[in-house]
Amino acid sequence: TYLKLAKEYVKNVENDAKSGSKTDAQIQEETANAKKVRTDVSALKKSTDALTTNASLFEKKEIKDKDGNTKMDYDRDAIYKALKSFADNYNAVIKSAGDSDDTSVLRNTLNMTKLTAKHVNMLSKVGFTIGEDNTLSVDEKMVKEADINSIKSMFKGAGSYADSVNAYAGRIDNYVVRNMQKNGTYTATGSYAT
Image (cartoon, rainbow, N blue to C red; front, side, top):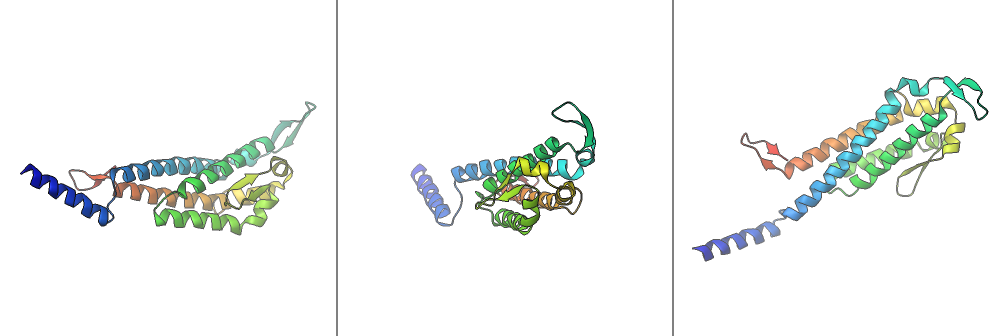
C-alpha cells in the first residue's frame, strides 16, 4: 500500500512539473521578490506624496546663507533631498519590479518608464538625467539653480509628473498583491490567505 501511494505521489509531482506547477522554492522566491517590490513601491509612494502634497516644501521661508544673513527664499536643500529621495525610490522600483514574472507588473513598470521618457525635457531642466537602464539621477547643483516654477509643475499637486508616477506605483502594488494571493493558500471561507 505504501509503495502504491509513493508511486502515485511521484507521478503527481512529475505531472505537476510537466504542467508548469510551481515548486515551493519558486513560490518562496516569487514571494520574496513581491515583498521587495511592495517595500520599494511603498517608499516611492511616500516620496511622491511628500512632493505632491507637502505645500510647505514649495513655499518661501527665512533661509540663512553662508554668511549668516537671512532672506526669504525656497529651501533648496529640502527640495533637493525630496527629489533625491524620489529618484532613489523610483530606481528601486524599476529594479525590483523588473525582476517580477507577472506581466501586469512588468507592463505598468514599463509604462512608468515611458511616462518618464515622455517628460525627459522638463526633467532635464530641473536636474534629472535618465540612464540607459531607465533609472534617474539628480544633479544637486542643477536642482538648486533650476526655476522653482518648473520644479513645481513637475512635482507638485494632482496631475503632475510625480502624481502620475504615484498612480503607476499604486497599480504595480495592486498587481503584486494579486500575484502573491495566487501563491497563497485557501482560508476556511474559500478566499486566499498569504
